[in-house]
Length: 389
Ligand SMILES: *Cc1c(COP(=O)(O)O)cnc(C)c1O
Image (tube, rainbow, N blue to C red; front, side):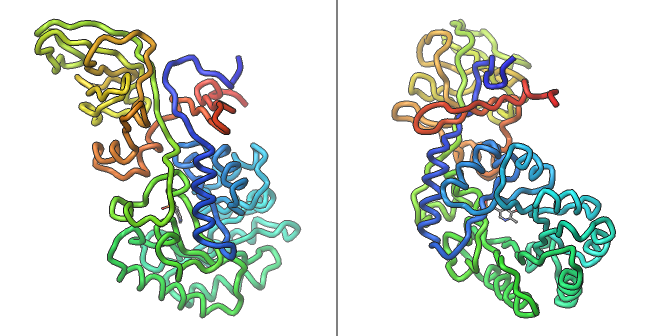
């Protein structure tokens, strides 16, 4: 059976041209002297890591970042040759494997380097980025002495190359910049304590890269804006480049029926028709990441907003139509139909969360269909790939 297909009427569409345009505009804004590290962790925020990585590299990103080693190995396995940095924690026991595949790791303990050194041989050095914690309170070296210890081991040992130093901001997407400024000055303090300047110094995520030109150093880590989304609602108006939303989600009406007054819909029989009503069943449910909290959310059918009625089931949900439609009519859960649009931000609002979480939430069961130059170029169906190799 071909992996390039799917046999259900629900899919997410990823417009790679938009990734490319978003990234080119960001690159133009940031300027030639700063490297772009495209952040493709979590399967590129649910968009598809391989296809996103290829589009980003083509559009001018020079490096990739992922959260952990498995994500980096998957890219290498798929043939991606560009530099990859793992920005989360890795095990020292896996350092040799990472080195062999030319994957740079993030380190924030001198002890980690000592442990890794024991498991490695000097033939293939490991590229290391030291992470300093300037106020995010997640991972990172917090004191100059620790940083100096790590630097000493890195430099004394032929088995590591000191490739970079970085930190991460906790409040870059907020209007108030006091805490950001504190973090930035701590970062500069750490850098000035080093005897050896590594080739890469980076601290900005999307939010910082798009509003603080004083925090560029020589590389920035770009995630959310590449996907056409704003780092926060408060930054939305101030984003200096045009962004186009990359992710859309669609399904097709599986069944249509007319209810009479008093007829009920879905588990718990909580929804009751107040008169004659047209109801469509959509083949998408909470196991697809279209979670139960989305009850009441509007879905686009025939360019009209139609509310989800009754409880969302594991694989299906029901919407109330303004009129009868044919089985097979396309329904858009995220995206545009005619004059109407449901944005990722609208779904995030409904879920009382951030836009980052929305495409991440759409599960492996929903095939990703990739569009380039206006046509479908590939499909990723993880259900059919499931148990292979
Ligand atoms: C996820 C992540 C980023 C990307 O942030 P965006 O806001 O999506 O641009 C950058 N740096 C680190 C350390 C991250 O974890």
